[in-house]
Image (cartoon, rainbow, N blue to C red):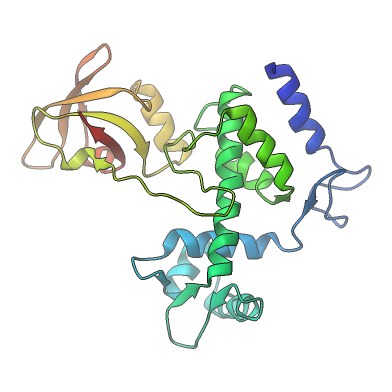
Length: 252
């Protein structure tokens, strides 16, 4: 299917009902309805991403991530607990229920499939897609996103190397190595980035660093951990520890 047709499909799906915004009072697009509460979905995503090895998240940590006051967060947690999406007890860490984890995983699936579609089929840069996907991820149509999956050839990761959850919301983490943990002489294939902010991805673009490129470590500065590396046509590039901490890859 051509890029033109792909664009028409997406633009048609996002066409608002006459006289109403995408997320206004109608809460629906012509063929795709949006969840009643986008806020709830954003809370579920934040809980999913912040969870530690035990699956727990502090209320204060969640408050800081979402930049929302603690009383408001507590109020939302009680609401999500009533819907069996979160385990909530006063003064104890928060945990997603099995149902909550599945719903959060499916939201993340929609977000990451959308990012991949925007890059692979519509020609957006990987630094441009996050905010667009933030809007599209709230559309409730499994068929819509399943069609994206088919058109993309069932990708396992998004444009930033993050794994895409399956149709049941399950996410398989890959065991990548941080570039900062590599030694002189090591070669790594860049497979993912920990941070996907526009600023960081634009920085990587300017240095011709992209997923799939092979990076060889030539020297490491003991004082600050900065690395001199080579990749592609670049024979000697210095990367700060701030950068190498955010690059993940597979050892060769």
